[in-house]
Length: 248
Image (cartoon, rainbow, N blue to C red; front, top):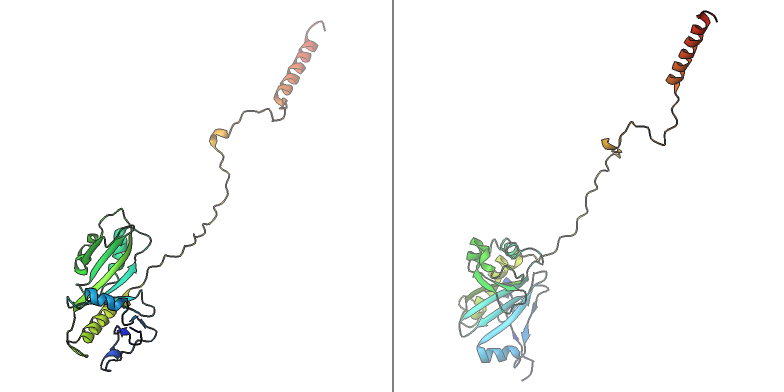
């Protein structure tokens, strides 16, 4: 089988409606093509599941689309990297704050570090009431969130209400409008400069225990002025007594 007739997954956007079988992509968007006989067709034949992805410019990530023909369900999902810092509940709250307009039946899966498959899975209505329901093991860091929205698949041919193409586009448009376009990827905060502290006035603090009035060896010899004057007065009085004494 050659690859001249690729199977193309219908892209999102109102421009795809009402234009026959040709779907117009938004500017810059990319769609996944599966050649006839390729892995997409092989999966469709074996499991009845058709998969594809749509990358929208500046979106947080590509949108994966799965059409289960046997179950009659279409699912759109988006993988988001969890913040690199913070406790597990802090990371869950970061995601829930960005899903204010998302539908309650949106499913949120958490993938922990060094784990296979989803660690926990809950509907958004339950996570809004209690974010801790998504935390299976508080000691493990969350690395990825997966948001998934499912809806019934149309069985009619062509386009319009009830058709396969119409059901895929309706689900894809609603998923992008209410969930994908409101999410911003996490980024680490830049380091902050420390504010300059004013330098205090330099005042020498001399402890009271170091102050002493005693004469140290470094002080000069004291002049005995008081002792010398007292000795002179005593000598003068002695001479006067000798002069006035009889027989002198």
